[in-house]
Image 1 (cartoon, rainbow over the protein chains, first blue to last red):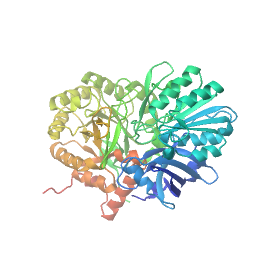
Image 2 (cartoon, chains in turn red, orange):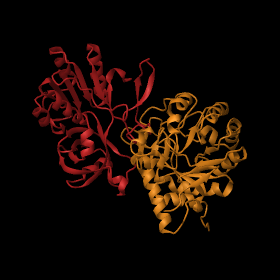
Image 3 (cartoon, rainbow over the protein chains, first blue to last red):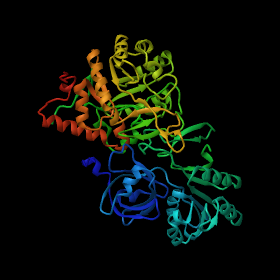
Image 4 (tube, chains in turn red, brown):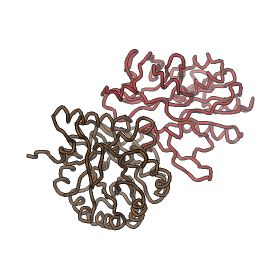
Length: 262
Length: 303
């Protein structure tokens, strides 16, 4: 990798790297400038060391304002994330951060529901830390062993519900059943969700039916991360109802669920 | 400190490095990273007569030493470009190449006429986009249709006209000769090479458009070859591009025949790539005791 004066501007230092499940890694990066600006829902765009033409967008799951750190949890899915997982404490990492628009934050005493599916769970953590006991956090996972950050969520004081596809822990089934229960118990002021598209679609539909504001964090294969190359398109409705190809990196990753063309 | 300035069709560039059309939007996103006046020029995002939403996502896939993209000319349309983007771009103290495309020679001529009434320094006519059905490669793959397109556009503008060529042709020199004959002032090449990747698990192409344009270091040798062949064929200047990653790559493409060099894919991963390449080119010229970048052009001693 080139290490010229320009690249140095983008360099952070790995503070810690921990394997938290068979596929998921928890990385803390020292990058004071980025940490100063970051808000919940934004992402970091990491360039793995080696022959990679593209960065990897990973949502931010912890913002250490005082320590000047960002925390990310990511799954190894291919060669790029494998190279990122090979980084160790003290290594340099090339990142653009923070990027994109984050979640809309209400007053912290408002009641909210957080829905995280699989590796879409981590960006919910800063929201749980913000709303604390006023948040109900519903996480979906294939199996107990693949669930991420459950202790972190519990520590926030949020009510935490884990759902597993195989029933190995918590509720056996999808996040939508506990969501329906939570909605009937106490109407929240906002629902936030990140995870697989079918889950987001279902959550958005339930929110719409009850007239509850809902924000979703979307994922798409990404290029530059700053809104210039226009590859990470997602269709949204403009004010006049016209369908517009917005971009996950710059217009998102967080969108008002009502705007998304599901 | 070498003299990096180059002159193409009477237009002075501070240096020969130009972000290529498509990766740089209309410049605003990168103005947060650095002063755009440091760039030799900017080839603005390809603009069509009317707003286009482009192709469905996924529009990008990583490949060995490159990327495939199928954006499909998403842009806000020529009138929005002229009112909302170009005035700002023209304040950036660098050469602006207005890249444009359209579904017919008449529509392209209309856009050219509109651009002719602005202060934009150069027009870059795109007849080589592999990702749109009408108005892209449809015109660039055949010398006759390419000539017809350039003839119509030439009649509509007195500004320097660069024609961007596709590598997805049997003989790129024929196309270059045809557009030169109709009055193109320069040619730029290469646009992307048509490619495809398939996800083994789903048996689906990774790109929703099935196919897309390949760019990045993987195509660099193809670019060097085609720039050389075209420079050997036409008398008008050649602007080279295709997988340039370093100052040495830029020097190589210039030796092959390029008067200036566009940088595309390198910027997708590294916003600072053009600045780094400018510095590296300067260092390489200094190390080799070469006083000016311009004297590199077409100096390859072919066997």
